[in-house]
Image (cartoon, rainbow, N blue to C red):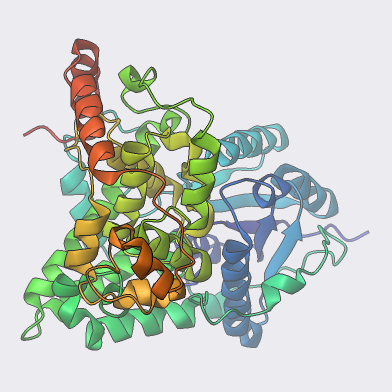
Length: 484
């Protein structure tokens, strides 16, 4: 019997691209044939952070990879099942020389999976070669040199694999077979499509014309859809590397008229890694406040909490900008940063509902859900870090400033479309006769915004001034902020 040649496995996760891909570049440089694998894991398919919109985006991304690989004789093997079980199946069918992947700053469920994969590799004697993702550093004790390392990483040459020299290994057809997901195959034009082609087109259009108004449009829920980069899902799922975006931005920044807009944008790329590094360094914040003195924060426990939470989730709070943002998320998977912050502020401050009650809901809605950004940002906006500025967003003022003509609200709340400004921003000001005249089928607000904001300020600042909050805040600063 002819002895089978060992193969290398490149395990794709949140890195669905073929360029600037260190694991693929490393495996491609070796003499053994290799297989690209993506595992649809039951633990993630059932996880409350994920939604069909994410799996559709991933499926589209894999289709796009196959389009590029097909002329070279390659493809991504789409496998169904737990990763360790799939690796064992592969190992039993042919020798595995090595496993290559990026490190993942993920949820507890993926961290436990990675520990199981590490145990499997040790047991089977298979080397697991993990590459850092972006400028995020595993095992970092503090931030003393982090900024310097970030710039060094982002300015380094991309790790592009030599695809033409790869010998592609074919895995058994019966391996990890699962049901074909019909719903994932149907495109939804309301959502951004996945894949390297869509990612490159989005980057090109931003740097060619859309990004010129970036600074002006960044806070507007309508204008941001056109003039913000819209690259966040392509970075979250790895259709582009952060380095590719950063270097393209630096090059374009030299063009006349682009410096201010792209300087502001490049600072957001730095912010991207900064927050993921926070989660990498203290992933327990998935389950508890990063400032542990907020564990006992006095969130509501009354009988109305569930009803108010459901109204917030469904965009039925009676507060127009809040409801428009939530309904827009349900339908498109995207709203801009300021509106995301406002949604969290209303949940945690005006409604005084524990941030943990809403964090997975928004994760399911954000097409660009990235655990390392989602959790630190959610806690920062919820005011439970003890070190960041407390921001209580006034939804009416935000509507007046960022949607002055009511364009966004009218688009997503058609039942209010006939109302004139300023009543559109606060329909509760309508007199009963006016309400009848407009035949208004829209709920009354579930909270008095003025009174709720006053109570939130007292509650938040009273807690912030506690000795134990300040003491824990010093620990947070030492762990997650560079020394001044």
